[in-house]
Length: 81
Image (tube, rainbow, N blue to C red; front, side, top):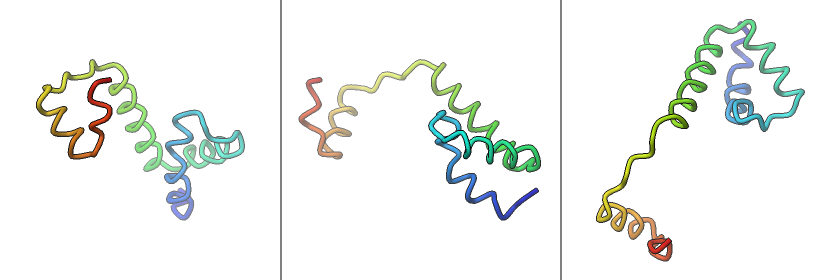
């Protein structure tokens, strides 16, 4: 396990999982994953989380809660969209 490389690779994990990382970075991450069980667990967990997010239905937000949220985020102009 190359623990010194873990923080660098974890910083780039989102780009890797989203398919936005360069081929060189993907190869570097995959080489690291071959020898680092901890990072493999992180990647597997993130992949499962992303899959669940895309597969599960979006919950409906109660209109009053939506109004309060948009106002608190100063997004009132988007309430009618």
